[in-house]
Length: 402
Image (cartoon, rainbow, N blue to C red):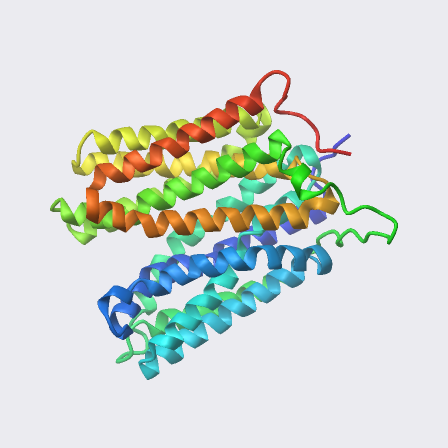
C-alpha cells in the first residue's frame, strides 16, 4: 500500500520544482531573443528563425540518448549535464553577439536544444520520486514550476537585455548563465533512487515492438504528442496572425502571456483531478479544450477571440500533456523506462518540430483558419485512440506490467 510522501520525496519534488522555475526560464528567454538575434546576425532574413528551429530539432535527436544516459547513471547526473549544456549555450550565444557570428548563434542554439531535451525529463523524475498513486500529483507539481519560469523569463529579458550595451541581448544571456549555476547548486540536493541494475541473466523488459502495442503506451504517446504539437502549431502563428489582422505586437505579447499562464497554472490541481477521475477523462477534457480553441479561432479574429482561443489552447495542452505523461509512467516497468521515455520524447519533439515549421507556411499560404483546420484532424485521431483505450475492457486504472 502507498504511504504519504516522506521527507525525501518532498525534498526531491521541491528541488525539481525550483529547477523547473529557474533553469526552465532559459527556453522562453531564448524563444523571445533567438529570432531577434537571428535577424541581427543572419546573412539573409529567411534564416532569422533558424536559432529557434535548431532548438527543437536538437531536442528530438538528444532525447533517446539523454534517457539512456539517465537510465544508466541516474537522473541527477543527467540533469547536471543538461544545466552545463545551458551554460555552454548561453556563453556561446554571448560570444556570437559580441563577434557578430551567426554560426556561433546557431551552435549555441543547438546546445540549448540539448539542455531542453534533458529538462523535459523533469516530469518523469517527478514520477520516479514518489509511489505509484502519487505520480500524477507529483508530475503536476513539477509542471507548476513552469508557471514561475513563464513569468520569470520575460521579466529577465526586460531587465537584463540591455545590461551589456552596446551589444544587444548579451545581458539576458548572461542572466541565463546565472540561472543555470543556481540550478546546478539546487540539483546537487536531488536524492533520486539509483538506476535499476540488471544481472546478465535478467531481461530488460519487453521489446519495444510489444510495449508500443500496449493501449496505455499508445494512448499516452499519441495524446501527449498531439497535445504538444497542436499547441505549438497554433501558438507559433498567433503573433503573426494578430499583427496581420491589425493588432499591435503588444497585443500579441499579452495574448501569448495569458496563454503561457493557462498552460501552467492548472498544474497545481491537474494531478488531483487525475487521481480523482482517472487518466482518460482528464486527457479527454484536454482534447476537447484544443477543439474548442480551434472553434473559437474559426469564429472570428476579434481581440477577445484571440485571448479566449489561446487560453483554451493552454488549458488543453496542460490537461492533455500532464495526463498523458502520468499515463505513460503507469504503463512500463522500471527496466523499460529509459527506452520508452526516450523514444516517446524523440517522437514528440519530432512532431512538435514539424508542427512549428508548418505553422508559418500554413498561415502565409492559406491563412489563420487553415492553421485551425490542420489541428482538428490530429485532435480527432487522438480522441479516437483515447476512447479505444478507455473501453471497459481496457480500464484506465490498469496497473503497469509486472
